[in-house]
Figure 1 (cartoon, rainbow, N blue to C red):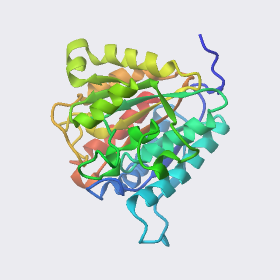
Figure 2 (figure 1 turned 180 degrees about the vertical axis):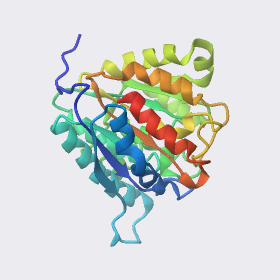
Figure 3 (figure 1 turned 120 degrees about the vertical axis):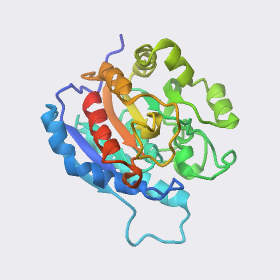
Figure 4 (figure 1 turned 135 degrees about the vertical axis):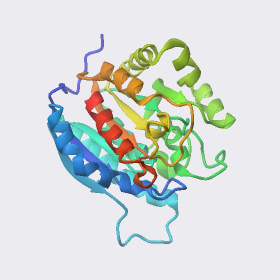
Length: 300
């Protein structure tokens, strides 16, 4: 078995980082998600026996040049987030990022990849209703939150694939995508060409999520530099997670996902986690906010 070089333990403190932007999505209100979660987060994790501190919330600078396009703004924010994540890893602390839209993943996992470069590649489990693997050329909407996984694999806008350092941050052999049910042929072709393992909802229903999660963990853990888990809340059935910007019916039941994520709990190879796309304005009785807290507890 590969010797892990980052020396994290399950008791390592967790730094929680807010990434409060929604520049990559069509519904611009998910930037309130991190603020909504913060109110109850530290107590919730403490009650779960998890030592955590809130690092702060990254958001667009008040004096930012309004003539900059969304790509430039997301690249600037992602670079700040990448530096923050890398600094936490360098201090042997685990991290949890709360988005915003899922374009925050560009910063989160670029930072982790750069920090672990000396130890090897990192792996990633991407849990999402969508493949998020468009490029500007293939995207019909132009929404950047449909592109972050492609960017991390080195495909897309040069400003976004250069966050942290130049080029791909992930190798396809260490990436697993779980829960997809809404995607375009161009995304499917890209991931298939690169060799990314995609577990569809059909496979989850046929084989069970625990089986799929174990297979995904084997893929992510094959990376020598550790791995992460990134969750877009729209992976979960909207009956259980109504507070998202792009709900897709027929998703993973919330309790099923919570039960399966426990398989990663206490894993010293787990560098950090990410939960994105909470839109409090679409939530019902804070149901999705509470679920976000439960997901973090299940993984950490």
